[in-house]
Amino acid sequence: MPANTTEIEKRLWDAADEFRANSDLRSFEYSVPVLGLIFLKYADSKFQKAEQELKANASSRRVVGKIDYQARGVLFLPAEARFSRLLTLPEGEDIAKAINEAMKAIENENEELRDVLPKTYNRLDNSMLVTLLRSFNSVPLDIEGDAFGKIYEYFLARFALSEGQKGGEFFTPTSLVKLIVEIIEPYEGRILDPACGSGGMFVQSANFVARHKSSPDSKISIYGQEKVMETVRLGKMNLAVHGLSGDIRQSNTYYEDVHRCVGKFDFVMANPPFNANSVDKERIKDDPRYPFGIPKADNANYLWIENFYSALNETGRAGFVMANSASDARGTELEIRKHLIQTGAVDVIVSISSNFFYTVTLPCTLWFFDRAKERNERKEKVLFIDARHIYNQIDRAHRDFRPEEIEFLANIVRLYRNEELETENGSEQLIKQHFPSGDYADVLGLCKLETISKVEEQGWSLNPGRYVGVTARVADEFVFVERLEELNEELEVLNAEARELEDNIARNIMHLLEGSAL
Image (cartoon, rainbow, N blue to C red; front, side, top):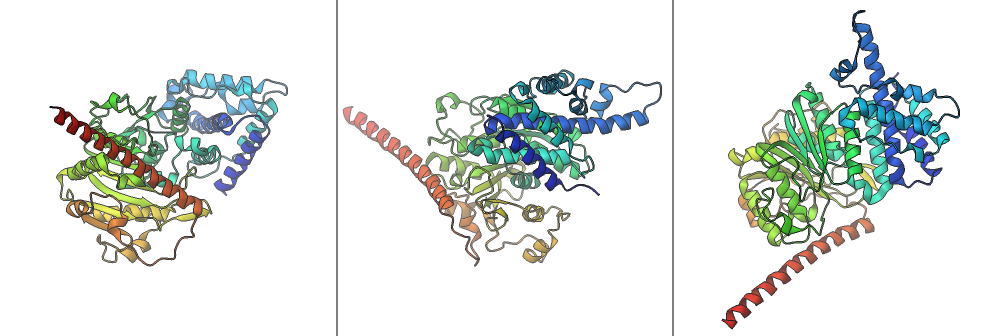
């Protein structure tokens, strides 16, 4: 009988956490080495399976080589890089040195991992490394599906939780990523994430392709940008642990366009940093990635939004996480939003409840663009979905979506687009309950298909709450800290708008004084 993945994840996490507790390392210092060992174990298990199959099918005259493993999407492991070898090293051996050499050997045989894998195990205690190796070796090989991939994602999530704000730089909650993927439907094409973190958007896109009976390697091409080099390494390891390859580069997306993105991509997905400030606007004033102008407010939300839009080709789709404040931002941000809506590309806006992220309690909004919509019958419409009352309460501080909830929300969009529904996760009853005719219809408190003229009447707001309406529900338990953070975000937005207004007034006064002098 296959093992229970959840129990295994917890057991492995307990072993890793014991390692941290018995070392002088801070959370972010031990996370990468631990993930490196998980990566090594996973690579070894895939190599082992491929080795058995290749030897069984090979003719007696033919030697199985590196290219045979690569053709199966498996990393080639030289003898010194085998996890099983590390386990059988004699007592007193320098385990840290052996692991470092194993990582170097893998990099030498797999060019895409050059300078990516952790090689600082000499900083760690030998006995604890032996304990970790044995603990990770206890993972049975009969887990169904992408077992180690799931464990790897579980560890990324736990490290994000333990690292606080820093963790948000590399991990977006899986259920949000899955919802984005289900709505933009990346069946085939070039995919960009210009704030890619550990690459979760790419992994879920590949899973989507595989679930629809195609090979990800032949259907999608992966491109990423990420500012922090350590996170770039995590992203490349995450791709490799899932049997994927891609072009992820370190760069500051605000200023650097390393993939020459304008008009190039079929799909864009991202979870950019919210309300980032201090971007040097002068450096990007002539950058074609910002076609609607540079916002004056000292936050980068609309720089990201323009970046996503401009990267799409004429039929491209984008899905991304955005701060709630961007939906109603005023001043120059409102002007940018107005021009964006008028293109017809704004397709779907989804409100998400608080507590989906590991590092902040704030609610968020998912935005979706569809450049093909600029020229079809849906051009003058925007679909608003209020999903704030749809969630699975994991514990007091954390929420996610169940598979059937992700499928249900994506199916609302499919109804709106007149696409075939997907029901493998059991969303049929929810669909029948809300859409008994089998066609899209507005549902009070859930979804509303609105015209651009109505959006204009609402001051070009993209806040679903303005359109969807409300139904009687049991009020959520009030959480003081959560509400305080929401108010603080609103205050930051108002302060930014006030500063912009002050600048406008000052400029107008200067013009008047200059005119009087003449």
